[in-house]
Length: 251
Ligand code: 13P
Image 1 (cartoon, protein in one colour):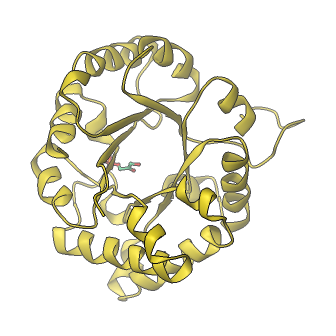
Image 2 (cartoon, rainbow, N blue to C red):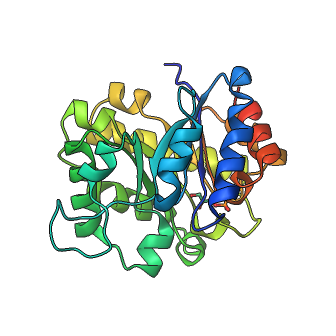
């Protein structure tokens, strides 16, 4: 099955309002050249302005996070329904930075996935092992557990709205990218395991993005791997020229 490539920019906690608008404006000027799906994940506080900048654009938008609670007295939190109400399409769930620094674990991530789907958001569920686990040779078991923790028990329709991002923690922000054989091995394994958990059809339809020091000079070879369906890009998504080069590499 041919899956359309997908390149997503996770801006993390970077940029200011002017910088966010300028980056979105510059990317938007090039959408005529896009033959893959492209989405941006700005900070919550810039979503409305970036959305305004991208009005009628092909570029999709998503949030970097959502609350595990549906609504109510959760000061500082942002709910799935709020994100849906402002027209967000995607949301990141399970990013390793939130797992590590915000102690987000299985129960919280499962609640977030359920709420995202309930309100019509498309989750990008992030998984990936730390260096210590890879050094022990347990990376497949580790991501399998992360999949089983949160991806079980969805309906066919629900699971079809989820994208997986495989982001080995040792590659995030380090400049050490997974080799094409490491990436392909893991993506193939993830797809196989989706087949075991659901069906071959769902496994073949699901897009699995690679994240971790993906740059213009390594994107093409990564995206040529048969099970790598695009990328979730951090640092290189903050410079228009780099992000555009990565988008170009996906088509
Ligand atoms: P870098 O591209 O900066 O390594 O970050 C990847 C990432 O964490 C995307 O979510």
